[in-house]
Length: 474
Image (cartoon, rainbow, N blue to C red; front, side, top):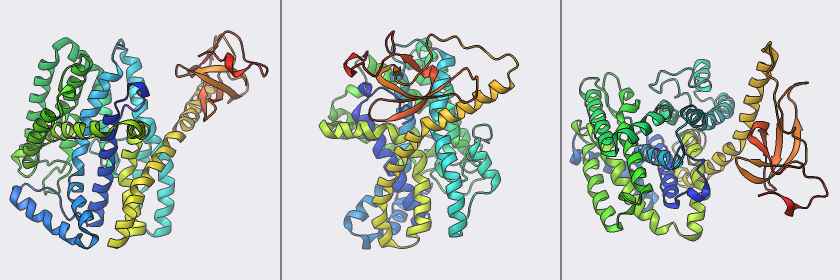
């Protein structure tokens, strides 16, 4: 879910389909929990007792129709896709770095900003809106400290998710997501030095050992469980609780690049292995000892089964739709519980009929908001970077003189992110005598404000109004 900037030609449509299903089920999971007042979460009381407890909230939805009742059952376990996303993140990390030298500094810069800027965009835009809505509708709103902590992440965080839960439970996973982003270069180095088998074995031992400590020594419980323990779910928000899952994704991708591994299994084998592993993990989540192993097994089984299903349908227009929507799954994930929370509080309240009708609206509306947030991101990023550079220019006693081969001007044909076909529409200096420019560029379909360093002149000479489009260098 996190590596959304992979070139479209390198995308796997079925993988995007898994991401899309995962974020939708997470939204429905949060909505169902909120609407029913957390009527059911897995408890360490055994399989039979959990199934009996699950029947009660399912029966309460029986008046919504048989189909709605049937689909409400998997929604209670939508949380399982969090670990699927961890697995996919490790997989995509290796694919995105295939054939590239490991530039740790450059990788960390790109990776961290890729994770943080979508989060900052959503937080900075949503906090004022939610504060105003909270006042108007007389709802509980975050206090100033919570808003400040969320808006300045990761400068302020206790890595328990508490400071990030101002408006969205999903934001509590940001320290975990960022941790894997920072660990990625080290894990890639160890993968090459130690080999796949050794790295997977060591990280699995570490993960199992840590999860055993989290349950029996730290007195914690998984993030999807409501259970009375002294430290709650905090131990399971740290990266050691899911380290082997991330590494497993890296290992699978390593073999995939060599034309081997589970991705190349026959559908029958993948379903058989995936179904068996998932069934064991499903049972484990209902026992305290099972908390040590459940989250290691569930994403493996679920990913294999979903791979088979989405490979069967990811053809033609469906594959195109997956590749279009998939890149927005990270923003969708960040928005999902936020949209569910406020839609239920403001609109649905305790009305079953409204819940039935508004659920599709929440699912589709979140996509629209996620797309809007992603299109807003470049402008916000350019604004922030520009302001920081302005401040540096004012405060720097020895301004750095920029040596450039060309000065951006309106009409220039340029390459953006290595792709030709862009043209400079407008150029602005943020300060008089400033040595950098912000350029508005367009490819004929969309326009963006970008820093001059992100552009290259397409060709040795400038375009002029008389130059035909056919002369564009590609």
